[in-house]
Image (cartoon, rainbow, N blue to C red):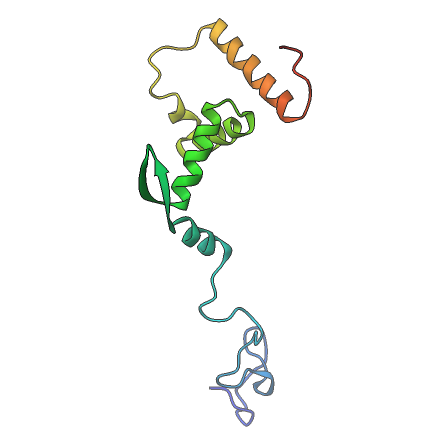
Length: 136
């Protein structure tokens, strides 16, 4: 390897002077991330997999925290909560993609059905933004 006494050693790109190189065992980022530390995604994933006990239909069951969250979002969506509906629909589109979301559909929507869905989405957006929907 290059040595200070080696007349053939040329300093240049990728070949720093011997005196300014890291010493053996010395880190280039001494205050960097510690070994074994975990990122946010790992921490969230670990917490979502933790089991909790819930009462379902009068029976006690152990399910994960992630399952509890999904159940709550679906139940709130079914109850008519517009924010939960939007979250659930967004999640479904992200998971299956827009092409697969309608794959089980056997016939296209009629113009009346499409208009009804457009009106419902517009109403959900107005409710979410705190506006009055004008209907009772």
